[in-house]
Amino acid sequence: MSEIKTPNLLEVKNLKQYFDINMGFFRSKPLKAVDDVSFAIKKGETLGLVGESGCGKTTVGRTILHLYKPTAGEVWYNGKKLETKEDIHEFRKKATMVFQDPYSSLNPRMTVSDIVGEPLDVHQLYSSKQEREERILELMGYVGLNSEHASRYAHEFSGGQRQRIGIARALAVNPEFIVCDEPVSALDVSIQAQVINMFDDLQDKLGLTYLFIAHDLLVVRHISDRIAVMYLGKMVELADADEIYNHPLHPYSQSLLSAVPLPDPKAARANKRIALTGDIPSPLNAPSGCPFRTRCRYATEQCAQSMPAFEEVEPGHFVACHRLKEIG
Figure (cartoon, rainbow, N blue to C red):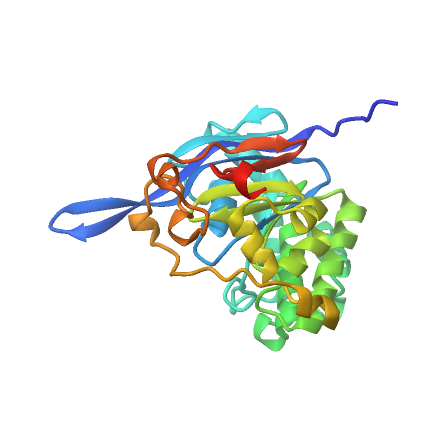
């Protein structure tokens, strides 16, 4: 029996995001925050995006939503390329973002009701004041807040509750696609589990598709169907979540996963930590060829000369590495 293929909701093709940095004396230099990144996300799936701080994960999410204008590359949504202002305006009715910091992403001068209702006002998604109020209370109910919270201000809530307010705001436009930018990294571990489970429940209930950006690999494994690994603006590996965890192929992915704490003491003792030497290079002065070569124990002269192609080495498993045959 043939498997029914789920269509891609979002496709990113050769996305680049460069920022011109002033070097003084009327000189500038491009900081390559995102450099030639391509991937697709199927309807209803969660793609986890991981990597060290500063590798370009958040910039990918913001560039997809056109909060930053892409330097180059294409974003396709539901089979349509985003080109005009009208395309982007319509896209933003179906795509939204949950920001990392629940303390700075909410306006301290607005009540919860106004924060959650702001997208409704912007896109004029109600016909009467009563409909607006009912929709706000419905959205708050989705995230475990009640009507008593509506007239309060953000500073009256804990970090977990603030992030719930941010999620309710993101749901206001009835989106299909949400960029979750490290939505639990600022929260206590006990609260993280509650928020992650809530994301799962909302996905089942509302048919959502997520790009879930994080650096905590245990959180990403719990929520993601597939995982993409980034390093210095480049995509280095992409595969199913279990495949990445059980069979990482890129040296950087292997190092990241060797650092994940294991609950079983015997397994933890047997686990060999692959420590990386040196510091992560600056995106302003990225190494030639493969960006990971300065910290890779397998690097050769070929790695310095050219960037390896991001290729499918097994069904659904993409890797960018010249030495794959030797180290796999």
